Image 1 (cartoon, rainbow, N blue to C red):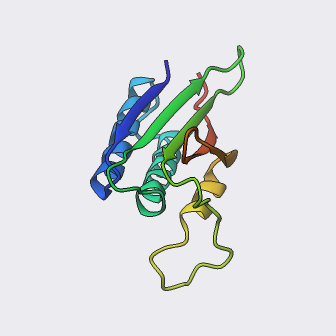
Image 2 (tube, helix red, strand yellow):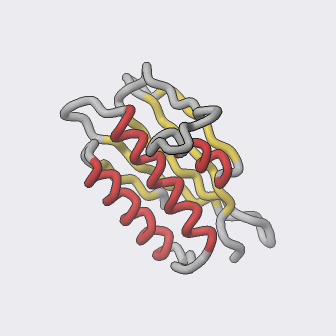
Length: 139
């Protein structure tokens, strides 16, 4: 079953998205101290923070969806994380060289490093969905 939840486009909403995503992954059987959960938690946090910072439209929420694609027997599964917001004209792009002393500009670099792949897709009727796919823990 996919996990779907809408959150307010606020810093509190982004934090709650990360916390509920972590709980959902634990409910799916992911170890709380495992590297898979930590990587997925970081990706959810970055995508949610970006939706709040760059995709916010007053009065509109963002949507977090997580889908666990079970592996064929003996293989590795995939966790697909999607964060949809209402600003389709503001597409994400990693910063080539973030300011060393700056507080921003590293989120998508982290997503790129942790995810097997990531991208962006248009969202009907307006907005975009930023997605990332990560390997799930074995078993």
